[in-house]
Image 1 (cartoon, rainbow, N blue to C red):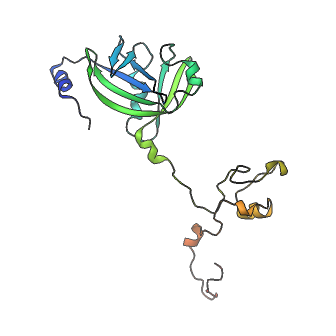
Image 2 (image 1 turned 90 degrees about the vertical axis):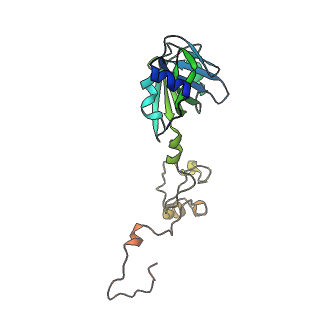
Image 3 (image 1 turned 90 degrees about the horizontal axis):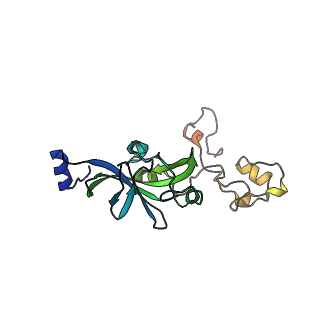
Length: 216
């Protein structure tokens, strides 16, 4: 539930409020850029939010909110705003975007709708496309290692240690036997070959056989 300032709520209830959206993008280097779907530039929270920037309410509203996953925001390049040169330099990667609903006749009155992080940015069709992640997207990320029988290193990387030049055309299927017997690299195997698999859960004693745990 959003906390709407009392003064803004009163204007909305009276029908006096003239509402529009503003977006404030803050890069990791501290540079702040503002955009609005109003027909005039607005000063909001110390940032000049430029009109005619190509940003619209529907461009990022649909999924960026507070849900996990990604959405996109689309706009046009502007030398005073987002430039293609800065985009190519990766200056917008990791930036934060805050969307506010404000009264354009009193821009100080507003309410935050959502905040998101720029997960990726690219030039497309004469403009830009920003991939936005909502705050709950972090819950979808895997933290730490996944324990399994197969090796989780990339073939030939620092964790693997195999000199791929010594095995031209070779690939690795991530199995312990392959690592040890083909590449002689068992000491660097990054899996857990003795970990029980799903088949372990379905095992049951067989009548007439010697059940002394020898097969394990």
